[in-house]
Length: 271
Figure (cartoon, rainbow, N blue to C red):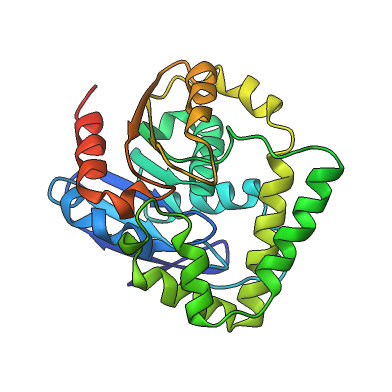
């Protein structure tokens, strides 16, 4: 892995292949390791750059960071700028998809194509007492001690076929849970993203003006973000193509990497 300074924070990243840059943004439960199964294929024709957001993977864990969606969007923008990439394609999984959308709204001239993988930002979180209770439950689940077997069992629920999970991510989650600072950052990030998703109407109004071509890939059996919410993405993104992968959960890039990579490369080849 390599590292680069982004506004005083060391951000680690993996860099493979040559060609036009494709920057990958992970979700809150993972790190850059989650992209590895798809990277080999993607890197045949692309320079594939997968970062670890602060608080995750091997990047720094700034204690004063807000860890909200806007913070991660600023980090992503700073990361691309630090690498001196003037124009990129980008793919974001889950919360990483929301991060890329926010940066694309702020800097549309930077993007050629955007790929959203089972993205946050289209499945509303309950904005009522149930939502408040859910936030408390999320904070509790992130905080309670778990051994590796329990971590693996919980992570496996993100997959249609649990045997397809990646052990590298299980190891990374287990290491994070053993680090109090990383665990606190993760808890704060989950809470902030949940709160953001309670009121998605302002985001959806802004997305109406996004002219960047967007591919939305959704696992048909995602238990976290319903595949039916792809219709919301189709409605609010005027230049979007929707693809579903059958018999696949929340992580198509891990569970169905060949099909996922083929979809992405075909989309990136369009003008």
